[in-house]
Each structure stands twice: as structure tokens, then as C-alpha cells.
Amino acid sequence: GIGIVEAGMVGILVALFGFTPESAIALALLDRLVGVGSLIVGGGALFAFSPYRRGVGSLR
Image 1 (cartoon, rainbow, N blue to C red):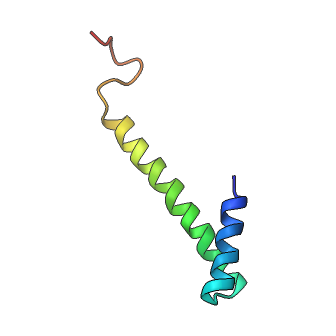
Image 2 (image 1 turned 45 degrees about the horizontal axis):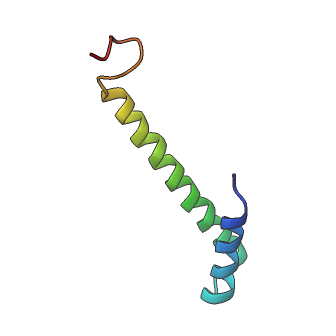
């Protein structure tokens, strides 16, 4: 879930890089969205093109 890592990222962006809290939160959430979204898209593509999907046949 969204928690410690994002809070730390927001704190660092605000304290060390001068971001506004709103911008830092938006950037942390965007980073999470891109990370999770790329896993979903990549995993979906691998599943769609995998010859080893369940119910398609046996693995001999």
C-alpha cells in the first residue's frame, strides 16, 4: 500500500529539493502509479502471449 516509502519520498523532496508539499505528493503518487501500472501492463502482455496459460493445453 501507499505508506512509509511515499511519505519518506515526500519528506525528502520537500526538505532537500524545495518542492511544495502538494507537488511532492503528486510526484510520489505518480511514481507509484507508473511503477504499478508498468507491472500490470507488462504482466498482462506476458500472460496474453504466453503459450503456458491455464486451460490451453498440457505442458509436456
